Length: 173
Image 1: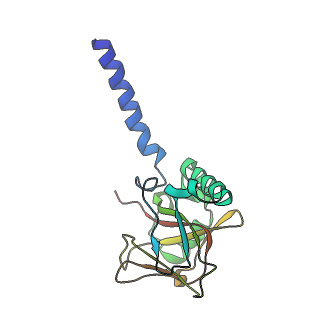
Image 2 (image 1 turned 180 degrees about the vertical axis):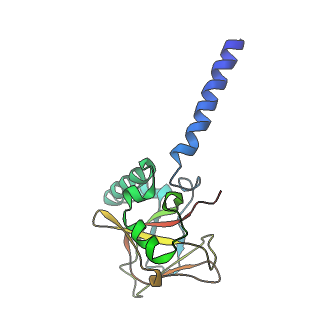
Image 3 (image 1 turned 45 degrees about the vertical axis):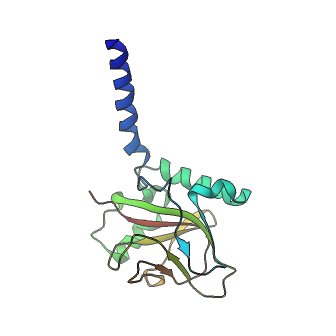
């Protein structure tokens, strides 16, 4: 009986140690939480959790970006544009501590507005935030003047988007 308990304990410890490694580039809840809502009803948002209910094209691209990000040692391995964005924005941010806090598919091309507003996020004015969009097989970091965090925590993106979107911030210890 003691040997069984030892083996089960060892298996449990190994499993628990693997969790932080597998979520190194994501906040722990990204895989389970929904996407932020859109204020414009014409904007279609597909959270990672519902990607399997989307079209085959959306499913494939979401699976690809999720797998790429989760397997990377650092986000800059799959998002090289992050290093350049950090040079122009905040030299104090360590690129090795960047994490994806939200990953979802957005399609705002049907919207009559020239901007997309996401709500239901946990950001506040002054927070460090990069918004990246997957375009033609690579991640593009939106210019700082295209992204605003409002007083109510909404994120206003000054363009129409079609594709995977990631919200990126610095991991706090």
